[in-house]
Structure formats: C-alpha cells, structure tokens
Image 1 (cartoon, rainbow, N blue to C red):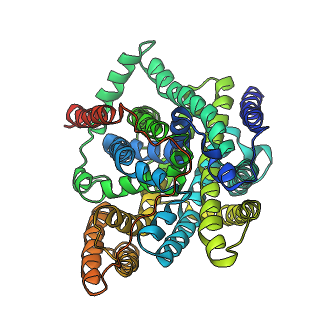
Image 2 (image 1 turned 135 degrees about the vertical axis):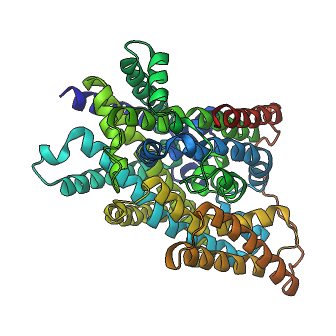
Length: 526
C-alpha cells in the first residue's frame, strides 16, 4: 500500500503541475502546440531534453548492459556531450535564423520538397518500429516487476505486461495529445528532478549497504569484486569497441542531438538563441553525470547477483530487481512514478514530434496546403492516436533481444539515422551537393545497412558499419552531384521575432565539456 500511495501521489502531483502551468496557454496555434509558444528557457529545455532521452530503455537497457559488459557502454553517454557542443555552436543558430518548426523543413530549403517528404516518412516509420515499442516494453517490465501486476490481477506475466504497456500508452497519449510540447516540457522538468533524486538513491543506498554505512567503502568493494567492469575502453570484440568512437558513433551522436526532431524540437521552442544554447550545454553536463544513474547500478547489481541474469533477455530484468532490493518500500512507489514519468516523457515527446512532422511537413504540403493552424493541430492529434496504438501493438515483439534492448534500439536506429545524418551534414558543410545526390544517398545508405546488418550480416560491429555507410553516402553524393549538379539558390531566412544573439559563455562552456570527456577516458581507461 505504501508503494501504491507514493506512486499515485507523485504521479498526480506532476499532472496537476503541468495543468496549472498550462491553464492559460493558447494550444490551438501551430507554434503554441508544437513549439510551446517559442518561450522555453534553458533550464526547461535541458530538463525536457534529458527526460526525452533518458527513459526506461536507458534505466533498464543500459543498466542491463553494464551489468553484463561493464563501463564500456559509457561511450553512448559521454560522447553525447560533445555532440551537444557541436549542436549549440553550429546547428541551432542556423535553425532559429530560418525559423524552423521541423528539421525536414531545413531539407526542403537546402535540397527540395521531395527530400523533405522522404525524410519525414523515414522518421515516422523509425519512431513506430524502433523507439516507441521499446520505450513502452521497458516501461512495462519495470512497472510489472515493481507492482506485480500479474499477481494482483491474477493473470500470466505476459498478460500483466500487456496490460501495463496499454496503460502507459494511453496515459502518454493523453499528455501529448491534449497538452502539446509545453505540457511535455513542464512535466519533464518535475520528472527530471525526481529521476535524479530517485536514480541517485539507487546506487547510493546500495553502496551504503555494501560498505556498512560508508558509500566509498561500498564502491571499493564493488570495484574489487570486478575491476574489469570499470574499464571504459572496450575490446575489439566487445559490445562497444573503443574504436567506434572514431568511426560511426559520433555521426550517430551528432544526428541524435543536433538533427533529431524529438530532441531538437525543445531548442526550436526556445525564447532566444542564448536560451537554446544554454539548454543544449546544460544537457551536456547532465549527460556526463547521468552514468551514475544508468551505468553504475548495473555494475553494482553484478556484485549482488553475479551471473544469475546472464541469459538471453535476462539482463533487462536486473534493474527492477535492484530497485526492490535496495529502496525502502515507501520510496519504491515514488521511484516507480519517476520511471513512469521517464517513459511518458520519451513516449509523448516522440508522439508530439511525429505529429509536428506529419502535420507541418506532410499534411500541409501534400494534402491541404490551405490548412489553418487549428486544422494542423487536430490532424496532429489524430496522428498521435494512430501511432500510439501501433506502438502498443508492436511493443511485445521486442522481447528477448540477445544483446539487450538498448543495443537492439541502437541497431534499429541506424536504419534511418545514418542516411539522414549524411545528407544533413552534407547540406551544412558541402555546398555543391545536389538534391538528386541527397535522395540517392538516402536509398543507397538504407539498402547498404539493411543488407550488411540484417539480411547478409557481416562480422563487423554495427557502429563501424555506420562509419562505412557514412563514407559510402558521401561518395555517392559527390558522384551523383557531378552528373546532376545543384541548382544555385540561397537558404532563405525566416525570422520569427527571436533574439538571435549568441550566449557569451557558449564557447568556453563547450571547451570545458570536451576536456572533461577526455579526462574521463584517461581516468577510467585500463
């Protein structure tokens, strides 16, 4: 009962807070619904970006992976800070100067309308078949485990998981559909605070117990139990070889933090360029700290459970077991509510971004060019409902991933992320690349990755394949552009009344983040 009461209490508090902050907002306009009225501050942007990114695929998936593989997977997190620095310096100023609502809009301005439409469809498909189902499934695992839904309802584990997934999907849909981006951002801020409190409590209380009242002593015991798991330099045959930092990993990170609609939409909703840059760089700080929450607990779990959960799909059960072992009952319910908030944040953020892409990038361009803002909002809400239902149906099919759910998510993301990143980077830095070349690279990259990863798998780590694919895409674009050159035109500015003065601390702040990343690898490299 303590668990349930604290869970309900915190969940209702977040819902009430979001309603209170939104009660006077205009949510029937395009900017109001999709971009939070272009009024978000750096702190809100950072909190929302982190919660959109950190969901149960991290809490469960990454802790499960670190339980089995150790600290080498920290690369997914700390290199994000470098990508955020690049986004703050180069990408966001361009986006805000152009007054963008969606990233595909940039592609239309730089290439053509067909490229924009193709990328919009790619993104819609990627959200439905990769991110949304995995987020729902990992959230279902966590809440089913904490509340024993199957036992309470006297159903099988599978049925209990289905019920939990459906409930999460319905609640997440309501947030996104009725509140828009601002509801997501405000609820994320509170859930972000809760995530750090609850997330930090798990390793701290565990280490306190292991060290008999001394956290540092507990950490030393965990280290002495398995020192190899604290090494951040992965071997060539590991799930995260060190070499991938210099091939495909940074391409993926730059795309995810600088070009991914779900993430960058928060920065597009900033009240000024300075606030957008603050939000990105603050997020970089958080990404360096967040391994304490999503990597360290997995290694601590190895101290408690050994290789008990090393079987296929078993590693993704380890984090809920650790929560139940180390947290007091009253705190378990609070943290379950935070976990639900993390799930909802990613789920409803993706729904909102998808609605934005479809309404602005597909419906208004191809179906109804005269559509009003109110009509676009209604269409966006309808698309959100359809995608939520599709994700709920697809969620159980991601179970029992051999290398864990987080690794599966990254493999699936590569299908669309790298081709899109290739043409986006070419658009920014290679002015002679043509629209025909961009479209050719999209399909060549897509086909290459599917063939080498899923149909005729080669014995090369999939992140290295990202790097190879990126180079292949560039070659394709250079060759095609030679025969089908770009037509000369200017990138049109479209000011939306924002202050576009750069934050004066952007460059020094970014430099400090880069130095910290290098220091982490020097410190923990063995």
